Image (cartoon, rainbow, N blue to C red; front, side, top):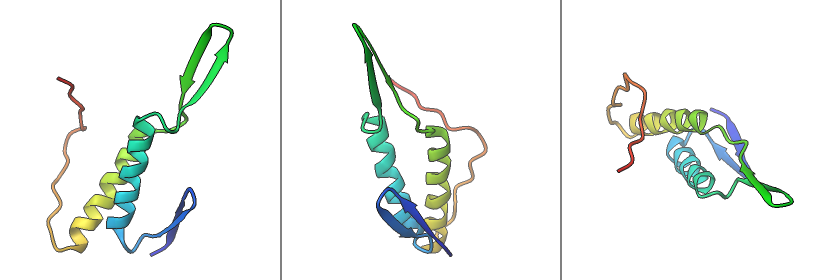
Length: 87
């Protein structure tokens, strides 16, 4: 396959398990606010991020499925959109 660059890491896509693990760690960093930028104008402060979590989730799922297949497993079919439930 090919190589992809994630920040300073170069990952070989022939090892989808390693790529999925790295993407999950990036997702955790983003959710924890590690990729957010803060802008302050006087008393007002705004925090924003340029990350597209939906696209990141899709890529994680793609590499997780490839990892399962590589290890001889069966991929669980995803027919419906994933939902996050709180509570």
